[in-house]
Structures are given as C-alpha cells and as structure tokens.
Length: 272
Image 1: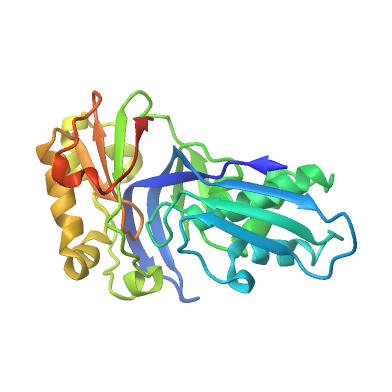
Image 2: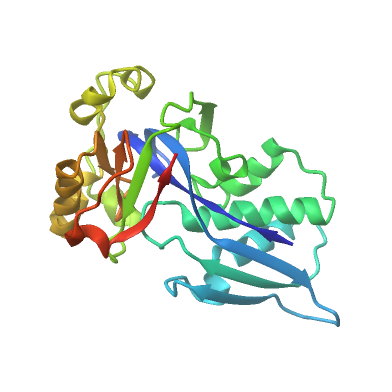
C-alpha cells in the first residue's frame, strides 16, 4: 500500500503560554501544501521478527529504531495485532524544517494501516493515537486548513483562505531543534486572534501576522532572515518562517519569479 504524506506550513504562530505539563499552548493555522513524501508498506512473504525500513531521498532522518513510523507501529501494536512490515519511505520533506514531515509520515502510516488491516478506527480515534507521537500529528489524519490551539492538537476547520495563491518554500539546509526553539521563546497573549487577522486585506498580513519563533531562528541562522527579506523583494504579499523553522515560505498573488540567489534553496513551488 502506498500513500503520499503531505507537508504543511504554519500561517501565523503565537506561543501564548507555558503549561504546567512542560508543553506550550499555541495559536496557529496549519495549511497543507502539495510537497509530499512517499510511504509504502507490504507484508513479508515469510516469517519476520522485526519491521524493515528503507529510506531513500533525503537522508536526514533518525535511525530505524527512532524513526517516527516505527514508533507509530509500536504504538498501534499496543492495541492491535499487526504483523511486521517491509516499509519504504522516500523523503522529499526535509527534517527539522517546520513542515511537519515526520508527523505527516506517522499519521499516514496510521491511516494506511487502519485501512489495510481493517482496524475500524474513526478519525478521532486515530487523532488520539497520533497525539502520542507528536503535537501536530493529529492534524495530518485529515490535513485540511485548520485553526490549531492547545499544543496544536485542538483543531477547528478554517476557511481555505489561501486557495488560488502561489507559494514558494525555501529551506537553507539547516535543522532547528523544536525543543531549543521553545526554550528560547517568550510566551505572550496575542492582541487579536488569527481567526480575525486572516480576514484583513492580504496587504495587511505582513504587519499583523507573526511567527514567534522567528526571533530565535533569525538569531542562530541569519540566512533565514535574509531569505524572508528576499521573498518580499521578489513580490511576496506575505512571508514567514514555518513552524519553528528552518523553512521560509512566500505567498504570491501570481506565479513568482524567484531571484537567482534564492533558487538553490527552493524545495517547492506551486498553487495552494
């Protein structure tokens, strides 16, 4: 069985407070994009005693036992009898890039295994299981534009307000630790909710919709700030870090002409 786990961008990201459990409450919009990995699994023909995972494409993923797909399988096996599998993951979404690649892989694995083995879990049950693997994993069970609060697991459908816009996603080839990014953040309540801000004219997004991780990301990797500035110079109506980084995206009203100096960093261009 083969699936294509999509990436996401964060349109706005405010860190509103630190919770007693050590996590942080956030406010963001998860928006799916068509940059995708490819995930395939088959059953062994003979007896097997361990899952087999082969990774191609980008080589920036954890070792077998730490891969989030293997963790998803281990979590599923607490509740269901699932045979060991041969898995092929082809990576196109960079890791540590703020695009949710690993979380999407895990959620896609849960959905595919649920369907293939007839486990009969509904979406809410799959989201609950996915949350054990990561705060943004539940979004990828049904990746439609969504307001996200809490740790990122409380989801409400959002109007697909970016549909028809063009997007360019750039990645500088560096990885930012989400844990370190949170350690260096400064939680604060936003003056206005994202639900209100996205209804502003698109020309007003730049000065009103923020990503609280940018200060830290720009400090440790100034090239990310440079990329954002260049995207604006190239005609973007809005540009931002995605998640805790390191990817930056630009939103355009028409197909952009990306400057030559940025071309090597482009990992995706297309219509939203």
